[in-house]
Image (tube, rainbow over all chains, first blue to last red; front, side, top):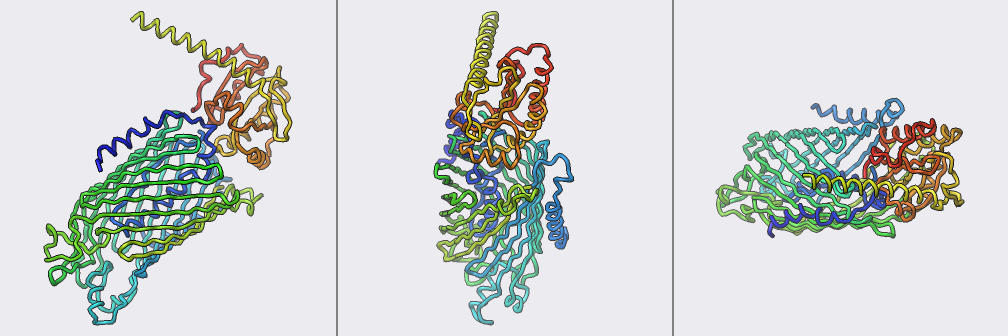
Length: 71
Length: 380
Length: 181
């Protein structure tokens, strides 16, 4: 796999997909608990601990991320 | 930190939360408290029981603080083979736990781990400290992250930086040297979260870890060239991963999250992870989530099923199956039950949710595991 | 240099003109739109001509909105005898969610439900929560968003000034387009 190409694609992704502007009042679905990632982020960090002890790789959880609901 | 103080601190935090600190403490917008019990047991009868306790406070001034405590018990079972048998000798030689005597091999090894983490955040900037303590491993970490919204809050960019320093002090073991060591890890992450449509979010990120120090199991020997020698891994490791997740909400009140991660490191381990989570409202209060994960990895360049000599590959040998080639599957389910209606009129609780989950993990090395989880999350 | 400044001036003039035009359109839409309250009765804000009207768009799934509404409710009680009122319009897709929150919060102000595809879409609400202040003549004098202390203070100050009959505020005051998008 061309890693540089993949990194470039990941970094450029927002600029390509950022054309659609979704207003805050349209984000009801994104604010639904089954879409919000806070609880899931904690679950994934717990899971990462035992997966790291059973597999040779790690990561994929990332840090904070959001901006999907009203201010 | 003294081990006895961890449960006491956890109880103290719980009591503070339950006595309605909000009423007495002006300027606090919300309190969030959670408890999760996590139990893992595998085909080798290794079990890990974890109690996670969490408390967050959101202030009106946009300041947030959080404390998390984890109390964990790991049980590595005694050698099951008959005393004096070759099977027993093999098990003792390649054990990943300390065995100080023959009698020790036939008793369970129980290890307690306590973790404490605290963080503070303000307007997208967060910083925290983590400490973990167990009988032969002491870890500390500081971390910081910054996240900002752009494009009318449709794009969030987050940058994270961690630095961890671990001290490893192996216990007395009959057939390994048990020399203390250190391990340091520097970690970077960059994540972009983009709202694509009113029902679709895309998340993509890259992470990099630079690890140096002791990275093999100090208790494990590896059979090589007719004898056995202590496991030896490289002292440095550069780990990278790239991940993407697409989350889609559907009109029937369900969501599908599909994710992919590619991992690679300079030990030659490459892996692919593909996962999917389908979440569905059954009623307004009851949610079910199904989940599947596929994992596939290649071997480290110095991994061999058998080593011809004690020199291994460039002086490196491993008895760790995690550095070999294998693939794994995980599937499971979880239920989320909102209990608000049982606490209506409490004047105290804003929201309370119960979770219950089970997952099954199995890989191509015939390793299998069961994972149980239950938890309670409250806001008040 | 002069040419560049001329172009800049022209652009500012055009955008300023567009802004004033947009303010008039928004005020007109707000006043003439048929709103349905949570009991199913319809009315338009034009019926409140002669009063200062604070129009607040909110949603039950929006945490800052839930935090702000009780404050607006208290102000509504204070202002109702002085010639001002607050009308809160929910953009929830399900009116029952708006109704449930209103009952839990014991809100007494005027509550309407319109969903995300009605007036909110016509106005293309720039924020959520989003607050418009119309003076007694139906002119739009303030648009602000967010539930921070500063934004709420601005709304309160604007209404108090209007009630006190202070110096005429020009429509679309330059400092009004604040808050977050």
